[in-house]
Image (cartoon, rainbow, N blue to C red):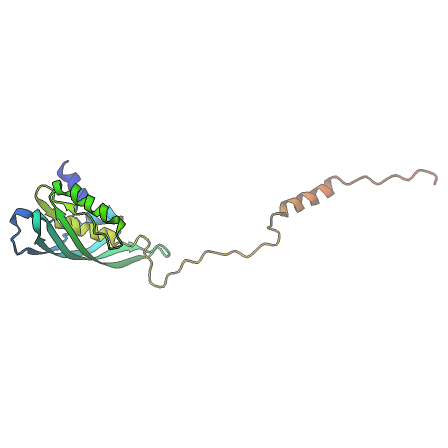
Length: 198
């Protein structure tokens, strides 16, 4: 996959090498630049992404796993589905994910599947650590896209279908009535002639 294709799929990148994460964990604040915001807007079908920022705390856990907790906030430009006016919306999404080495994912996913029968809240299976990297920008992008309202409305905008006044001549039997009237005028029976001399 070339760099252009990768950037289209992951427009906001902030990779963290897991080998460089200290035992005490690390904190990262990231902000998307103009090209990343433009690419995210295209990816999400938005008019624009005015701002996008996130913070993350990455904490090492046992067996090479890492917990990533954070928050994404953004301001996006959309089009109202009712009025078609440009509007702006805020996105505010929490993030709480577990990452694990790829070889652990099948076993951990099976544990989650086994918990389906229990009544307790089922945790999501962990995300894979790809090539020793956790991409915080990709996590932020995913959270931002999940927070987009697919049917944005301007405050106070209400869809009201147009209701036309009922035409008294517009009903299911209007066509039959018209045919019947037409038949009377075209098929008039001739009057019977009176015999002469009577």
